View 1 (cartoon, rainbow, N blue to C red):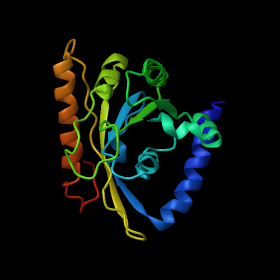
View 2: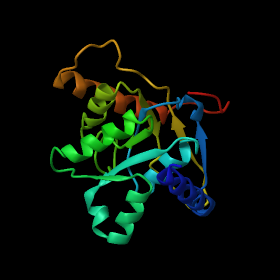
View 3: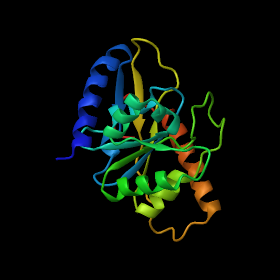
View 4: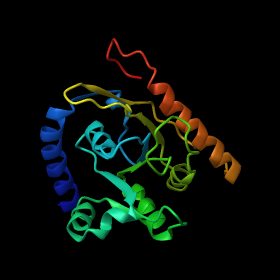
Length: 205
């Protein structure tokens, strides 16, 4: 039995039942998340965004998040995060341990959750996205999945989390640093465009 996945699903359910009552949500395009390894990438504007990324990912999948190392300084919180499969990354350096763990997650067929901007932002395009998500997807032969989480979250007002269609890097050959940076920019553009998608039908996006 995968105890990390079991603990993750228990915590996901508890948080979703409580947090979701105050800040309700509706997910569009959840069917766009395929079986197998994938790198789920979302915009990041609020501390609650990791919750919504987990809520939008079906519970049959284990979503492992890459989180800033500072969160693990509190030992009880750090132990809980590690217990559900979340792992630390040093945002100020090339963290090889985090890269190895991310690749291990993907090669085991799980979902990896990343915020390509690397930090919370207050406006679209405020910071340039990092190419780490693209590099990991390339190395693990996993698709990238864009996800949009609304910036504004009002108490008792439903927000719409939108999952876009996955796109693969297969067939592009060996990517240069410039290629990865360009794809990272395109990924953030895809995420931003999801925020302007018409959703009246409630269908896939």
